[in-house]
Image (cartoon, rainbow, N blue to C red; front, side, top):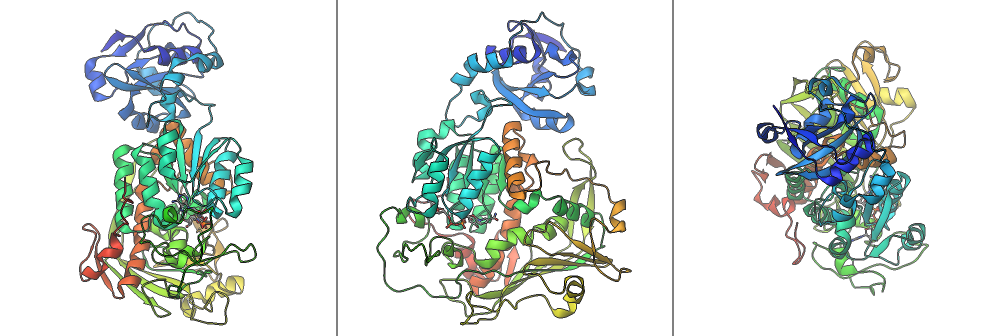
Length: 609
Ligand SMILES: NC(=O)c1ccc[n+]([C@@H]2O[C@H](COP(=O)([O-])OP(=O)(O)OC[C@H]3O[C@@H](n4cnc5c(N)ncnc54)[C@H](O)[C@@H]3O)[C@@H](O)[C@H]2O)c1
């Protein structure tokens, strides 16, 4: 039943501007019952156009609408009566639009979109704290305001540059180290960006102007910084591993879900066509049931297996050491600023090897290299994790090499049978119990620059076909052994793979293997090009504009689960014994000593928001 109502000015102006109708037009709205159920509230006369149409829908309904309708990346938000409404700009009419009776057309006022954007009161009026860009009057062509935290480190620079390359505004750079090599280059490159040393001060001061936050700090700070941004409803792109502890991963997962925030973890291999092809074909049965998974990396390529150094060095004047330490226990600064000595004891980069700050080789790489098997095999909570360090464990750093065994129980998973953005079609698959073996580093070798001999790889009898294919075993890779064949991925990110089915004599690249032809492409591809780092970031930026958290292939809902698996290996290494894991309860059943590694005790003043 349709009633008559009035769309508020700002929203109506936008609609009018787009569809060339009088801004004072009266819109028909649905009944109170429709509103309560989240059905369409109002339809603009523009729906009769072959090119554009408008909807006004309840905010909590937009995800459904966007799944069913091919809508563009542009929409705006306006309050409407007792509930929030959204105006969606449609690329084209759809059957669904036709089914809803449209109000009478009204005369055109020829208001241009540009005029509207300049003059709308929405844009000026909605700068409230925590309000998303859309409510601030952003539109299809507006730039998003991005603030980058940990902006001057290696990855921080790349995350900042990816957002800038996508055409967004870099409004703030936040980093505790104004003496780092990145300070000069990045502050010159982004002269309009305000520089902050304290992310909390940044969020307090300009939070209301920020549309998205990138987090590229060392691992121990990820959750603290990310949760502070999410508490303000900011979309976050956080580097991998999502967090340093399992408790934090779960905390961020819940927060993202409860607040419906657009999130992405920075395991950029997720953007690759090859990875998505691997996931869909393995899930659809390419190599049958998989019982064994082997994943390896050449990391660590930074110091591990060391004790804490004695003494103390002067803290560089440009570095805020207290904020760098963040939630970890305070310790003396060690290191020196020497351009020839690229990496210090802790900063930059070498924090990875320290238990208080990093997650070792496993944490650094598993979110990339385990990504393909994790998704393809729907690996959830393991039940048992056993770690064998290749050098003596201490309480300070990770070992120079480690072999870790994970047991995964039988699993059921619901997988899409068509583009999940268009349909709600899923089917359930059942996957057998499987063992995952992780290998990093190698045997200790004091004469080697990285302290180990890179020898830690899957058993030779499993890799003979790989050697036949390419003459060697790559530095990093994964091998999935199924009842009907094997899949081998030769890189850090699982972005490409080879297939050897039972009747094949050798590995064949997935793009050339005839067996793949029968498997439909059913996981949407990232349309943003071959540079995965850029494409992955751009996916997040698009999701912010469209307010579609599910568009992000590595949203926290998924990324937190991958991170948890990886972190359990770190827990097993630190606990020094096999872990029997109760995933639902988040406890090591047989090992209460593991508790501090599952949930860290933070230094005073450093809490999750
Ligand atoms: N996706 C990838 O391929 C990839 C590659 C490299 C690194 N990473 C990830 O990126 C993150 C950063 O790694 P990196 O190699 O750039 O390290 P880095 O040491 O070079 O940079 C970290 C930066 O964070 C800054 N920082 C520290 N504490 C801060 C705080 N409280 N507030 C603001 N800034 C702070 C540091 O000063 C430094 O500039 C890590 O999580 C790492 O795992 C991802």
